[in-house]
Every structure is written in C-alpha cells, then in structure tokens.
Image (cartoon, rainbow, N blue to C red; front, top):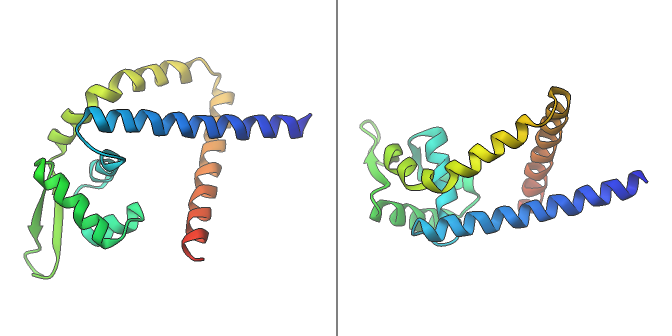
Length: 151
C-alpha cells in the first residue's frame, strides 16, 4: 500500500512538473520570450544586479548562453550592462525590476492568488508537511543536478 502511494506521488510530481513547464512556456510566449528566458528574470528580481558569471552559476547555462540571454534582455530594455567603477573587467547586469514585474505580473497574478487560496484550505499541520516535502525535494533536485553536472 505504501509503495503504491509513493508511486502515485511520483506520478503526480511528474505531472506537476509537466504542467509547470506548459504554464511557463505559455507565459513566455505571451510575454514575447522564447523558451524559459522569462524564468531567468526571476533571479534578477530576487537578487538584483548580477555579473554574467553569477548568472551562469545560478542558471546552469554556459557563459556564452548567458551572454545571449543578457543581449535579449537588454534589447527589450529589461536589463542594462553597468561597468564596475573599481574594476573595468567586471560588468554588472542591472535589472529594471519595475519593467520586469510589469511584464510578467499580469500572467502570474491570478495563479498566485488561486495558489494562496488553495494552500489556505490545508491545516497548519498539512502545510508543514507540504513545506517539508518541498524543502527536501528541492534539495534532492539540486543535489541530483550537481551530480549530473559532475559526470
């Protein structure tokens, strides 16, 4: 019985991931992006200005791919390159957080509201179980990604 439940959770987790990909692809297309470019804007919203190297580490993209990503964002005036005042070799990528938020918020606002309502239907104990699961699942995904990158 427990093994059946574990299998069911794994299948639901896969379905959640697939649906998440579809949602993000749809948002990207509506916002004028291809693929997952718009998801990388989230790093700028969370962390503020970044170097290309820092963005490469966060995204797992090569530095060449990050350069293309930054070029696309800069063309849309979502970021700008800013040389470091003390080290001419270093360039920061500075986000226009207001513009980024205005671009993606309309697509996520209703979903976030509905997610909040869904979570509110659970008891505190159930929410703590969900939180524990997600924390551990995220750690497992991060560890697995790191291990695959090191192959």
